[in-house]
Image (cartoon, rainbow, N blue to C red; front, top):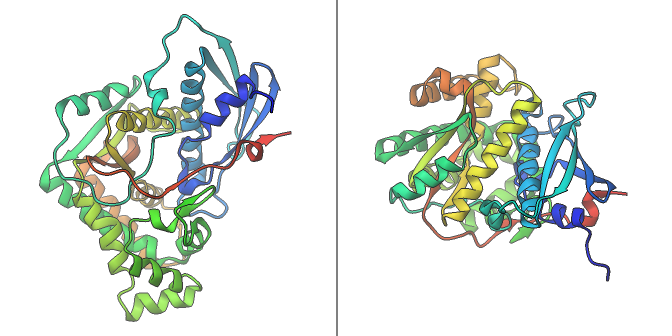
Length: 357
């Protein structure tokens, strides 16, 4: 069997970058021995969480940072050129590699494959100063971390997540997404989220699987059997309380335009990899930012009027927590803490399915 080429080695590592619901919105085209293209895409046409493709663009940015880190592990540097003629729905970025034997590999590259999402509660032990400083130092210039730590802030954030989750679990637009992105009876999944990584107990998973066979079943559960309560408690309230701190990554200015969102994705990936490097568990909490942005911009993301009003309330809670300016400049949010690594996780499509021939 032939040895993988330099580009194949780099892409094999870079494909482990995070993406919303493990959608992996990228494919790769090899140009020559030291150049390749990233062909991005987005899921805005079917995913309510991908407002104007912003979430997918963050993911592509995370991929680019992972390409740079993977290249540094094999003695190379990567530069990126965004095709200005390509639409935002399908961004194209050319990657050029050059030999850099005298440059020290970025240590964050050691944690590319170890970076995971843990959706279960962590310890509530506060972050050690050294860990907090390491995470802040991992960010590039132009970004800072807003920490929401301490029992009061964790409780406020847990309640916000609990109320925000009611939107996720009661609108048909989100139901269609969840039905598409969960792989049932699975510990790993190449292109979805395995049900055993959702952070739910076995009975709730079984009930959810039954309900998600149809929208009518979901409506019946929600109306007559308090169907959102157990998932919201297990996936949002208890994890929101069980962490060292919540965080929001804040940019210097609002992340407008694809270049800004690619940069934000690169910053997010560095922060997440720094967590992995410090042995910290991590879970994103992007949907409050997404629903808040829908509300701020007056975009009707659902036919359910109650959900639109709920998004306004989520935005109000976020403004109360972090302030209006920080919310407008926010690029990513989540929680971190000390705890066990997950026993189930999303994996990735094999290299041959990601390469365009």
